[in-house]
Length: 239
Image 1 (cartoon, one colour):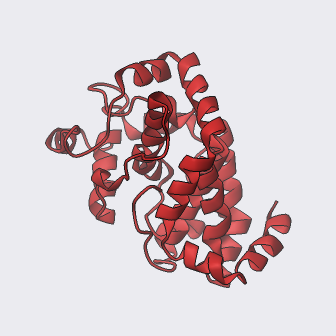
Image 2 (image 1 turned 90 degrees about the vertical axis):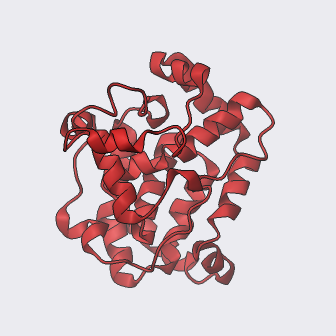
Image 3 (image 1 turned 45 degrees about the horizontal axis):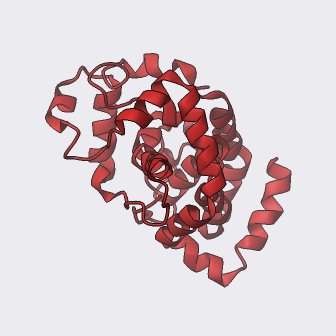
């Protein structure tokens, strides 16, 4: 896969319009995802309906924000729990769950919730995958999400995001990080069917236990956390 992707990404880097898109216009990708992802949203909704936990999420429609999460309670959770790791991610990367853009262009109420749920669990995925909010880290998460959901916004972010990376970062992304993210996306449980925020498992679960269903951490030498900022930060909105 690395051999096939490398020339494609290099050609994309030469398109000036895509460079502007990759430089932080992710809200445009979010709008495009809403207006073109109707069929994919139906597939994801049906997948949630078939899963007991996913069906419960669709019925109860929980939200992830500072008004619904008890951040003080998360802080009091045992060290190494998923909730504590999630809170650490928010603190270290200086992000908030309140930055998720509301859905505007999906008329069906249930489908609108599905795409909103996708946006609001995005930072949980960062936590589970161990990815920072640098451009390189966001691209890795986008590849994971593209495999898991098939949403147009994820596919676009995965393909167009790399055009502003350095040659060294692009090499690491194509040879190591993309295959790792794709493997995770294929083997991990559907992220929309996990009730992260309920007052019991998984938010209280030991982080290492929760990650048993994931293939494992990326090699330290290839982790965006150890490779520097790699082009700055993504503006958070629709993701």
